[in-house]
Image (cartoon, one colour):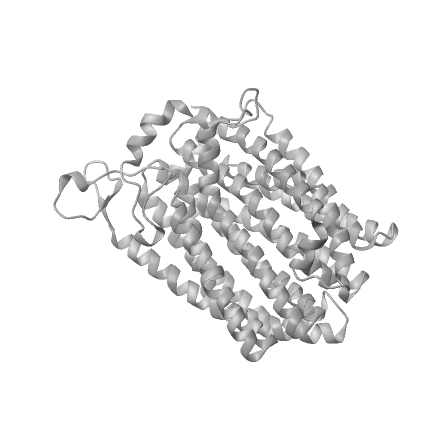
Length: 504
């Protein structure tokens, strides 16, 4: 067995706690770096260009979420599939998934950028731009969209590196973009006097340099997973499976786009452009802790995915439990920072008193229930990591579509701008309760028993005494089936994989 295969197989042998630390810490550092990367633009723009510029930047959040939705559909879908295929020791299939990920990123990135550039102004107005904020938002997004393929590829390749047992390299790529963006931002914004457009150029250049390094890493033919000829042609089955799993993060990001549109328009209506800027500032601060949580999830996903593919369900559930505890601790710390140090946090972004006061007020309300959000995110990502896309999609959509948007409309009409702020923690609270219910009901459908002969944990679905009902489960992306509410496992999945193995 080669060293590269041994590195991958440690996902099924090494103690779960150590594995989660090994994989999550680099992802956490990368996610924190990514959030700081986003904050750098906001800080330089807020301090160097002005309060209207930071409000204009906040208008672009839906765009960034929508772009991220398409990128996540490919990157997360492909990386999850690769983790499972490596667990199944289907290395040729993993190679083809890598090649299809590259091709899909190029196709989707070009199409998305072209459509958005053609209708940029109408889209920005729809997203909540006013006559004052539109010029800033347009200048920023023109550059970002021109480099959209680079952004998609950079995030997609980082996800692939994590799936290929290279979490540290993914971390280094993200840290590099933060450092370069911090260097290039003042250069383009101040020295070249390019304003908000300079911040966008710095962002794309930083991602481009990191992307080149990622491709260099993945071009090493001695690696178990590497770029090679003959893997880039789109295969329908692989593309279907990538998008099938990627639908969950796509839905999450697309809904986030829709939600921010509602929030921006409500804030403009009831609080003005500065309220939009205040939301942008608060969002950046809360996002730091959300990104740490995402790092924990990214560390959990390859462990859960591999062990699900290898049918080591005891190890899979251990990873989930550890992730829930870590996420809850992180979000509780975030709550403390937002409640007791909001002035210090907001002052990093602006010295405008009116904007500062609005942002502090909004931040405290927005972060009111952060401690209970952590496990909700872990549960959603857990279902995604084992290919239960429908459940993951439902949990992603519930917070944003079923709860947040109706609450935004209702509360803003009753109490104005404070209703917009209050809708955020209220929807988080309801979504957390729903996620807990789903996990409890889902786990009750299974019993975990230890085999005396193999000492390996096995999972069987509890059913009436009917031998035909007992089935084994492996990874399978469903094409159809029961609604997420039923949470029915994909019966006979392992059999279907065996039948289709040679087709991938």
